[in-house]
Length: 94
Image (cartoon, rainbow, N blue to C red):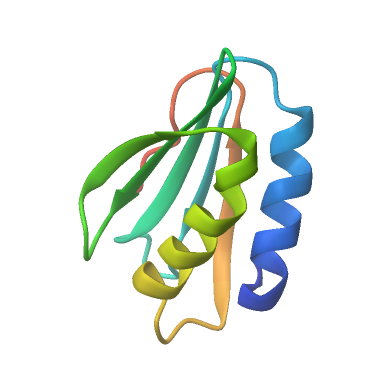
């Protein structure tokens, strides 16, 4: 678990080094809402689940803005978030 304030910079730095197909998932404490980012060929697939359920493709330039908005929306009262990295299949909430 990491602080919510450190989640965006930590996620962005980890996403730079992920191989294609790898998934970085940020989850609430209860693991019922979150954001999953899958690295694809030339960009990222960002999937929100919780308050808003949507999947969008984003390039590296727009990823920071997309994640910042998603974190505010999906983690409105959270102080800590789970950060999961999976090199193959998406890490699902339990």
